Length: 232
Image (cartoon, rainbow, N blue to C red; front, side):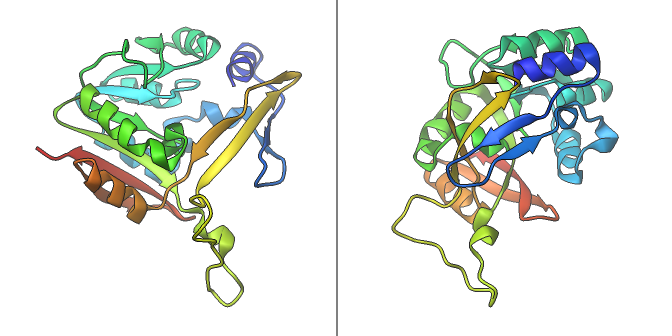
């Protein structure tokens, strides 16, 4: 991702990122999608950016498109990504506070008023059993009264039969857990887990971990924006 982002910024074009998964056929991601302006973003993203307030942490910021939009709104944002190339590109694009950091490492500290997790931001959690650790980490990073703004998608539609019934194996892993590997040119990354989660399941785990989940807005294709707030 970092190499593709850096290439696109330098040259104005880049080969698509190839996306592999054991669950799906090979796909491609146009790198230009990572350089969207505010007007080009989905309504869910625009809503999240408007709602984000206080000291904002843009998690997995990539090319910095969300952070730049927030700066244009006059908001205070710190952008983090695990890719040094992405972070260097963000700085060159004008993101004022861009850091190479991992949300889950204890040496990264807050506090923040908003944790912003967009572009299926729930994916960073990886697997459903990681949700308690994620919520515990979020509580450490959030100011009192702060919140998480996270979007995700419900993949249950992939298991829908023609008659409208669902064919989901309840004894298998949660259906929203996906493994991905990405390749740009001849650079192939390590496989990683990505979590798509339906709102009801997210709300259940949030409640068990001392958070309140609010469905802020639903998108046009099984996607949604949630606000997650720690209970006092």
